[in-house]
Length: 128
Image (cartoon, rainbow, N blue to C red; front, top):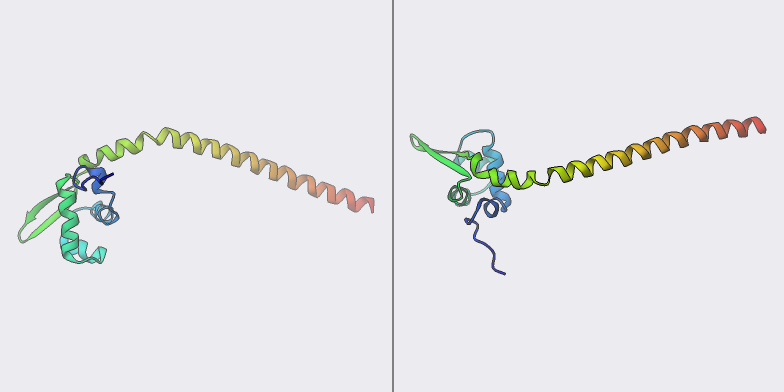
């Protein structure tokens, strides 16, 4: 099956780890390309290529300020990812609640086991 173009939608665009790193770097606010280049340790053309893909899907916006181009995250474009992940939240919450119950049960069993072992040791000592 042919792979979808990375510019088809935001899901495909952020599937690339370096683009997620760029989004993470931009989460703190606007940054110029050179700042991203230093932060990511990539060559400027690579960063620019990733930024172009992110711009094409609307995940980042750019504005000119003097001679600099400042990039920032466009949260609205990332909303489909948020909505998709959110659909799993109830399932995850339920599973974590079940895991908490199992862990609590094991903890109680361990505490009960610790107490009975001490009583058995004391009984053995008094028998001897």
